[in-house]
Amino acid sequence: MSSDTDEMGGDTEEEAWLNEKFSPDLLETKTDLVECMLEQITAMEENIQRAKKGDFKISIHRMEIDRIRYVLSSYLRIRLKKIEDFTAYILHQESQRKEEDSPLLSPEEYKFAKEYQTSVEGHFNSLALRHMPANSQTLDPKLTVIQPNLDNYIFLRVNEDTQGILIEEETLDTGEEIVDLEKGDQHIMRYRPLAPHVASSAVSLI
Image 1 (cartoon, rainbow, N blue to C red):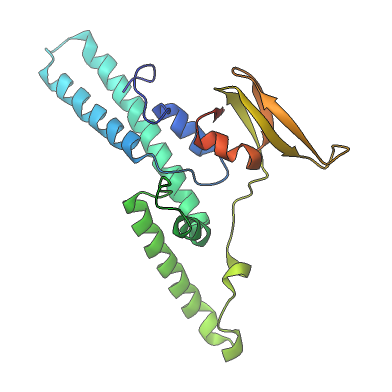
Image 2: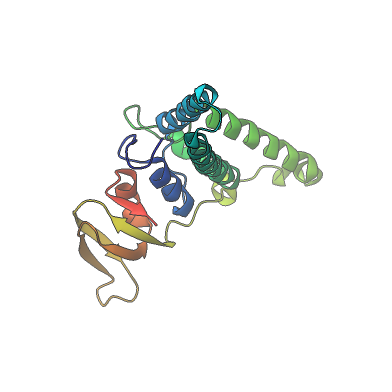
C-alpha cells in the first residue's frame, strides 16, 4: 500500500498511525485500513515469489513490506496500550456508542478489553479487596476509572477549512474564543475541541 495512492475513509495508513500515536484518547478503529494493509503485504510477498532472481524490484518490495509492517504493528501496539491504560473508560465509551456511529473497538480489541478488565478486577480483588472490611470491598467505578487527558496539547495540520472551533483557555480575557482553521495551516492546540475534527479527517496530528 503506497501512501500516495491508497486511502480508507480519508486516511492513509501513516495518517491513521500518527493520529493514533499523538491523540491522548483511543480513536475509532480502522479495521478496513488494517485489512487493506495486510492484503497489500500478502500481494507484495506473492509478487516477490514470482519475480526473477536478481530483479531490482524485489529489494524495493521488501523495503515497502518492512515499512507497512512497522506502521501496522506500531499502530496496533499503540491501541492495545491505550486499551490497557483506560480499559473501563473505553468500554464505557463503546457501550454509549449509537448504532449508526463507527465502532471504537474492533471485535478482537473488544474481546481483549473485556478479558483484560475481568483479569485486572479478579487480580485486584484477590490481592486487596477480599482482605478489607466488608463495607470496603466494593469500589465506586466513578472513583477508580482512569481517563485520558483530553486537555493535552497536540500539533496539528489542517486538511480542510474548519470554522467555528470554540477554544477555552485560562489565559484569555474572556476565557474562550472562536477560531477558524485554514487548510494547510499548522497549530499547537488543546486536543479536546479538535477531537471531532481529527475523527472526520479535517485535521491530522503531526
